[in-house]
Structure formats: C-alpha cells, structure tokens
Length: 501
Image: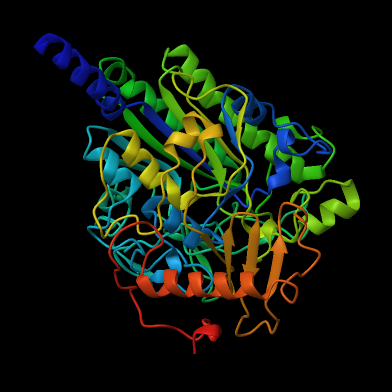
C-alpha cells in the first residue's frame, strides 16, 4: 500500500520535475524594421523568398498574432528583454541615440540575467540601442577607458556589436567594454544609390568633423559588414560553448540584426535576387545569415534541444509604400500602416519558435502574444517564478507553445505608437485610445472579421468600449498587466493619457 502511494506521488511529481529541469539552449534573433509580409511563409504574394524563415515555420511554431511591445527600436528592445512596457519608464515617445543612461536600470531582471542565474552562458552580438555610457564626451574621448551601463551590466557575459542604429552617435565594432579600433574619425550620412530615400555609412572618413552633427566612427567600420560580422561572431561564440552545451551547461545568444533597417545595403552576391529591389535582396541576405545559424546547430548536433526564436522589433519603414507601388510587395502584409503606427502594421510582426525536442513542427498559435511574454515563458520553462517587481507585463505562453490547442485566457495586451498613442487588445477586439497630438475619436475593431482595421465599430459597441477603457486604465495605473500586486510606474501619469483626466 505504501509502495503504491509512493509511486502515485512520484508520478504526480515527475512531470513537474522534468518540466523544471528543462534547459534548452536559447537563440533569440531579432530583425530590425521587418514587416509581417517580409516573411514569405506569411505572405503568399511576397516578391522574394525567405527560405530559412520558412524553414523555422515548417519545423516549428508560427505565432500568427505575435506583437512587439512598441513600434520603434528602443522601446521594443526594452520590452523584449525586460518583460515590461517601456512607456512605464521615462521613455514615452521615440527612441534613444547611442549615448545616454541605459533604459534598463541596474538590478532589473532581463532575459539574460534570468538565464545566467539559472546556469546559462549568455551573449549578445549585434545592435543594442538601449543607451550606453561612453568615456568622456563627444570629441573629448579617452577610449582606453571602459564603456559602462551596457549589455555586460544587464546579464550578458559577452558582448560584441554596435551601440545603436547607424544613423546615431558612435559607430565601431565593440567587444566587451572596448572598441579594438576606437571611433576616432568623423562622418555623416552619404547617398545610397541602390535604395530609395536611403543613406550609407562608409569611408572615406575625416579626422576633423565637418559639422557638429557628424558621427564618431572607427576607421575600419563599414555599414555593409554588419550582418556578416554579427553572424561570424555568433558562430564563433556558439562553437566555443558547444561542448559545455552537450555536457549540460546551456547557452543563450541574443542576436539583434541591423536589417532590413536603413541603410538598405545588400552585399553584391545578393544583387538581382528576388523581385523587390534592394530591400528584397537585403531581406534575402538577412535570411541567409539565419540559415548559417541553423546550419551550425546541425553541424554541432545542437539543433534538437535548442530553442530558436525569430521576430522583429516593429513593422516596416514607411518605404513599404514605395515597394507596394513599384514591386507589388506588401511588407505589412494585409495589415494597416507600418513602423511608428498604432495600427496592426506597426506592431504585428513575424514570430517563429523552433525547438525540435518539444515544439510540434508546422504548428500555429493564433492567439495574441506579445514579445514581453518571453520572460515569463522562459521562467516557466525553467520552473522558476518571477519576482513581483520583474516582468510586470510578461504572461507565459509556455503551455500554448507546446500545445497551441490549449490556449488559455490571458490579460489584455497594450499597444503603443512612437507618438505616444495607446491601444488595448483583448480577444478579437482592439480599442485605439484618443491621442494627444493626433486628434482622433475612439476606434474599435473586430480583428477576426476586419484584420485590416477598416470599419470602426466603437459607436455600435459602447459596452465593449467602456469595458476596454476601464481595463487599459487599470493596467496603466497598477504598473503591471501580469498577475501580482500593484507596483509603481517610473513616472507619474503623463499627458498622452488623455482619457484618464
């Protein structure tokens, strides 16, 4: 009898024990300004093929209703790494330059610190764009001194990359806290002859600035080398951790690419591919480097227990309109508008997850998911509970990732535009709140019937408007949308919250 009771208890415990012990390697690849329609598996009319993104979809899970937490670079990256909406911080609109206090405060839980504290090697290779503290001031640098308040202070063991987008601040290949070739020269945007309304960051560079807005640049920096260098360094780092991974000490790599964000600069080997001009070629190059990572996992026999996540920081740059007209390619897919916008094209993005050991090939999750949810999802995967002051807007979809048919009700998702406007999404309903600068009435859309947001149903559904308004007000006021006790936002209420007067 006692033996039967013991076996019964053991069987109840084993699923949790196995669940708590799961530690796959994790690779998070983040593209820059890639629209939903820029993955060919999501766009039957795409004018180019993204064969490796299609492979991720074929071999893993496609989140068809996946969203970034904002519609421009800096705030989306904050939400991705911290599981918290960036508008809860001082950043209410727009993006940062390269140089300033990091938006992620010391001590805040990030994807990197969560995984590092649970036995992972952690690395970031690519574009940061969350603020760094450089030694000295512009034109008065001492590059022998270390960079502070940067990825190595936010949970990453290793960092190699550039500080921000290439139209901002300081451009050099940083490894750790130093640039091996310091950014001692000066430059500015130069014409890009292969793409529409675009620029280049390329030699020749000057010793003395031509004007005060000139960028600080290293002699060996060339914009078109970013994707190759980022992927090369990522492969080098993974190979260095492969033996540890096979022995049970996993790794986490965060790989934020600079593409297809401007400058659109595909290497010559990709010219002529696809039928969407230089932009299509640049997406094909991006996809090529994703394939290099997948090929490495196969070579090192790490693919089976490596969780690969691929998504984008926001919708496509406004040049999507030119591509639609000239090439009949819709970077935003069937959705309205693009980068910076509160409409779906601004924040509904490609989102794929492959984990052969656990995730069913070719599966789809059609319920709303936000990139802020990754922190809680990985915590649940590890059998860990987040602290009350961590991942305030992170709601785990771990169970649904493994079995999409088991989707459970979740708190609403809050969308936010670069101009400070808000929307709330719950189930099929999306309510766009009135904004301060962009005068507009409340807009309510049924995304199941009207994914292109063409018919405003606010006047016909006053009860839904009232309910969603109360819910977004509560989520903002309580400092969180995940379960837990209320916490404070970093600032008092601000002027964009016009409905909360």
